[in-house]
Amino acid sequence: MTEFYNKSIPRLKLGVIGSKFKGNAAMDGKTVIITGGNTGIGKATAMELARRGARVILACRNQEKAELAIGDIQRETGSTNVVFMQLDLGSLQRVRSFAETFLKTESRLDLLINNAGLVGDGRTIDGFGIGFGVNHLGHFLLTCLLLDRLKEGTGGRVVTLGSMAYRWGNIDFDFLITNKHLGTGRYSWQFFHAYCNSKLCNVLFNHELAKRLKGTKVTCYSVHPGVVKTELSRNCSLWQRFFIEPIAKLLFLDPETGAQTTLHCALQEGIEHLSGGYFFCCAPEEVVAKGKDDAVAKKLWEVSERLSGLC
Image 1 (tube, rainbow, N blue to C red):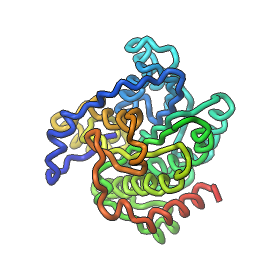
Image 2: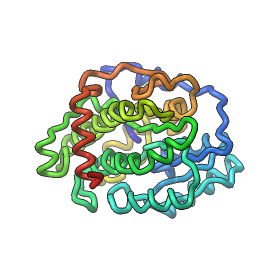
Image 3: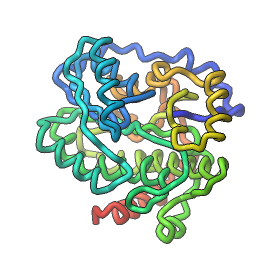
């Protein structure tokens, strides 16, 4: 995911560049799902997990891009255990179809990486604002549908790509229920604010998920990958991309560097007691109050259950 430069947090310039996951955990025999695994951070993450022996499922909307990514991963790692399964997070029915197919065809799940994300205007098939619908609600439903399979293992993990942008987000539940989005509009500041709101949802989802996983062997983590150059702006207009992309080339990190904190949360041993935590630069970081509000996190979960048809 592309993250936005914040001059008030200098660590973004230097800290992430020096952060590299150095663990040697093997993934032989383990199965991983990575949403949006055909480009950017997702592809870089898939590359490393395949190199470590995992069965990697690229859960993506675009089959052609996924097959190209699989070819690259195979050539780079020598792995023949990377497969494509179609997933459109902008359709709740297609999320359900993906989960149904996966549960029928795959016997185990060890790691779910909720990586896909976007910034832009528009609506999902179900009428939700695209940022809320894809970045949060689609991943919420996917995770809930796959939790039982994760629990069958010996230590499953859920890693959700958040963002420091959650700090600028807010959730107006009345507005969400009435309008099915947390912000939309054709101006850059409007859909950037919607993006911030969706990232707050990601962090709160992770916070509440950890509470609901207590007593199981499954743990969960949210990640700020740093300022990373990817295809997050693909849904922006031409003039908006004309503004964003030159800045990205100058300031943003490459996806391989951006994937390091995801890999840390996916593979690092001994962090289970930090389930529900927020990680940056391969280390836990304190979440501001709005990102760990128990009441808001619980309400978001309950509203998300209703909006996704789980209850």
